[in-house]
Image (cartoon, rainbow, N blue to C red; front, side):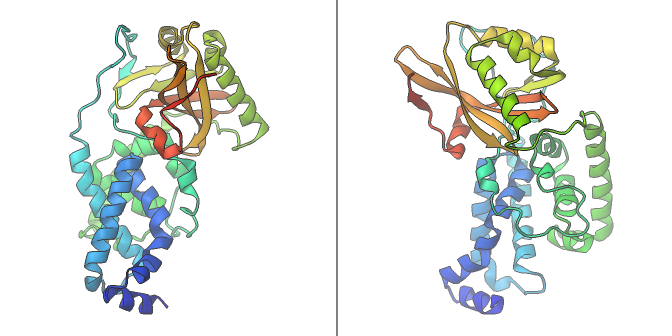
Length: 334
């Protein structure tokens, strides 16, 4: 069947080409997201991949599977994109009349974005190879994707292909036009860097999605935020809670810095609304504030990371991310 589809696609049959590639679209999108850390950049890389595959199908020699061939194209498209993306400057603080509190640190990964859980459906249907070290759901978490973005591009590609997807070293060497010793060396360095970073992260697991524990924590967060109850909000945080707001570099770690930050933004006179969604396997919210025109205007997308019965991290993303979650930039007032 696959041979017939390849033959028809090579003759210009677009339906045959879609039949070949569509089963891999979702997983390739997730792969590009892991590489690039942005759902829009991943979508662009995916489209470039499919176009290159369509144009280059005549050169496909069928020694590898269509899936492996597509991963080769996608990975190299992402490596090219990374060279340009990492030159983008961070964004400056842009709330007029408000001076941010002193950050505890400045982040190095400023162009990170969230990935909607709705786009994960079907992404993990195909089994990974036996060499994989990470669960698929773990490898889409914001903490993991952030850690990946700190790796040099070639190490990032090798680690994802080997430890997340489970491709063999010789397959990865072929994808990257290099040697097996080079792949093994890059993988060792990438693992060492990632292990050092993950060793600093708390290991307490988050409650299961949709569980009573998660529902209760989410309800408490929404109630505290919408009522601008800063003490109640801070009480939900772990002692080492981490706040960030890419593409700005400002980062805050710990309850006291978090409290100072929210004291600046959560003014009781304002009316806030949070619309629930999910990103990277965790709860997320479209955030809105009631304007003088009676309309609720978007102020960003919040993604939280849960640990036990507390919130370990909260990342505020730009409102431009809301469209990926099916959320508008404004809502009727209430």
